[in-house]
Amino acid sequence: MRLTLQTLISHGRVARRMGLGPESRINMLRNILTGLVRHERIETTLARADEVRFYAEKLIDYAKKGDTDEKAMKMASFWLTEKDLVPKLFKVLAPRFEKHSQGFTRMARLPNRENLDRAKMAVLEYKGNPFPPLYPVKKENELTLINQLLKGYREEKTQELYMKCTENVTVNN
Amino acid sequence: MAACTRGLKNLLTSIKFCRTLQFQDERFLCTSALRFANNEPPKFVPPSKPVIINKTQTTASTRRFLSPEFIPPRGRTDPFKYFMERRDMVRRRKALNIPEFYVGSILAVTMADANASGKTNRFVGICIQRGGRGLGATFVLRNILNGQGVEICYELYSPRIQTIEVLKLEKRLDSNLMYLRDALPEYSTVDPEMKPVPFSPTGEVPVNKLKVKMCPKPWSKHWERPQFAIQGIRFDLCMTPKQMEFVQKKYAKPWEEYDMLKEYDTSKLEEQIFAEVQQEMNK
Image (cartoon, rainbow over all chains, first blue to last red):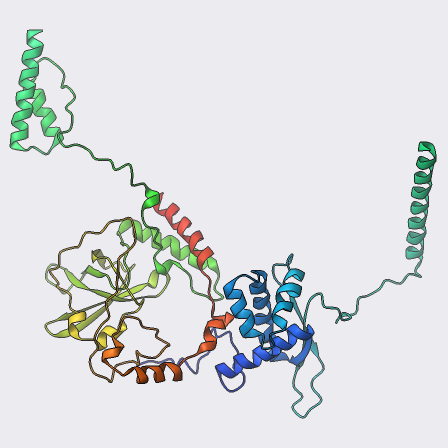
């Protein structure tokens, strides 16, 4: 007698259940991934963003294999429903992440949706996108004493270097 | 001079005498030679049988085979656990020779049994499944004895197992032959007194492209469905091509081959583990 019921116990299951079934889940993720590749920054529910994140990174891994690889082409044409994004994937996104081995996406939480469901929202983006950064970059205050002294020091050094260069030029002449 | 030749002649006659009596023991030969050769010390006796060293066959040309239970499953467990298990597996393999075999090969296993006369029992069967990873790795042998189908699941690393012999090494079209339960009995019968078929340690393992005839439906599982992906059944004798097409279409999951979550690439792991196991075994 089987004491465990595989369908009810989900130990070690990595894939969330979304939509109407496994096919529906894959189709939904496909649509979200296509939107992500087109706009490079999208906002969805937290669960969907988390699922798509894995597939987005794996898609970039496949894209890095190159245009000529059969498997990579098949994967790209399956996952991107809008076929004009396939060249964008191979020619824009793959070279952008050439140096990185992992971590091509960034996810940040947003305030809950305004609707009745108050769903948890998240923003998912590919790194290196042209939009302003999600987390504002902290600029140091230039008007503090130390920063002013450092600024002065830097200016003096550049002046000295300039004098040295002009001296050498006049000496050579 | 004459004494030397006399001694030599005696030695030669003694050697011939020994050879006719077919003494296998080298020590005995030496002592008999000593007894007959009175004055001279025992001369070097070259071996009677030529020693053949096959220089063309190096260790590199023998088949690279890593038993599937060494490859860890996908999960979040610490790799150190698998490392420790592998060490214990290698220790057991040094005590008992576990040969290379695949699903579809015919094996004979002798196991210690307290209740049997002679304290061991021997079972011959065809391997239908190799399951489990690590020290709990199992294999199921199937045979039909007196019209009754018998399947025994043995643990590879169990201390009760005394010998595992491969009587016939071959592969089949599938990695799981559970459908033999629903096939005609002739495909699962193995002669218990079968003689081992010789096989070479180099070269490809022969693939038996046998397609099995099935008993009438219903079967224990729907073997025709694409989830099992069985190549070794003669479906054309069981159902019409239309029925087959219908079933394949209805239960097909075409998105599964593109689902990156289900991919598990073990090539690098396999190489690492193979090198590690080879090193440990040769120590």
